[in-house]
Length: 390
Image (cartoon, rainbow, N blue to C red; front, side, top):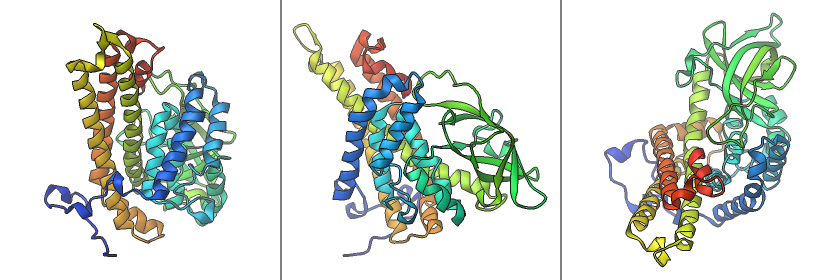
C-alpha cells in the first residue's frame, strides 16, 4: 500500500490536492462505523428520553449517563489502553462527538468528560497522574471539568488572576482564585485548573474536589440548560506537585493545544446536531399539510431544507477532511508529544471548523424554526430547544 503524503497545515490555500489525498466519510472503517452506531443508539435510547429531567438539573442522572457511556467505551475512546482506554484514533473520537451532538445539553457534559477535561492529562500529565486518574475517568467514576476562563479573562486567557504557590517543602501547590463558565462544575470530581505561579508563570494543574474548593450557583442560561455551568472558587486549595501539568510556565501551550483539539470535536458535535435538526424538519414538513398538501412540496420550504443540507454537507466535509490529514500526520506513533504536534499543524483548519460549524448550526436551527412556523416557538416541539442550544 502506498504511504500517504503528510499535508502541511493551511496548504489548502496554495496547493491542489488529489482525490486520493482527501479523507471523506466514505473512507470510514468498520470500526469507525461501529463506534458511531454504538454512540447513536446510546444517545437515542438512553439520553434523549432523559433530556427533560436533565434540564431540571438532575446531576445524579447525568452521572449515571456518563457511567453508561463509559461502559460502552465512549469516554475512553482516545485514552491509551494501558490507562483503561481503547486507544482509538482521532476519527473515532470525532464520531463519538458527532453522534453525541444529538444529545442536546448532555453533549456538553460528555464533551467535557471525554475532551477538554481529559486530554490535558493524556498529553501533559505525569506518569503518576495518568495512572491515578485516567482509568477512573475512562470508567466514569471520576467526572472532569476544565477551568480556564475567569471574569476578566475569556479569550485573553493569559490575563488570569488565579494563583498557585509552591509550598516551602516543595510537595504541593496552594491555589487561590475564581473561574467562571465551568462545564460540569456542579458535580465534577476533578478539575483541570490554570493559575499563575510566582505571579506570572501561567501553569496547569489537576485539582481534586476538596475542602476549600466550592462552586457558585447554576448559571441561568439561554440554552444548554441540561449541562451544569457554575463558577469555581478556590480558597487555599492544595494539589500535589505530581499534579502539575507539563512544566511551570507552560500553561499557554497546554491550554491552546487542548482547545485546538476541542475545536474539531466541537465541530463534529455541531454536525450531529445539524443532522438531527434536518431529520426533524423534514419529518415535520412532510406531516404538516396546508392547502391540501404537505408543506415540503412548497418551494420556500424546499429551499430552506436544501440550504440546511448544503451547510451540513460542507461542514461534514471540513471536519473529516481535516481529521484525515491529522490521522496521516500522526501515522503509527503512540508518542503523545508527536500526536500533539501533528494536531497542532492543523490549528488553522481546526479554528475554521469551530467558527464555521457553530455558525452553520445556528443557521440550520433558525431555518428549522421557520419551517415549523408558529410551532417553532413552542417548547412542545423540538425546534424551540434546538434554537436555544445552537
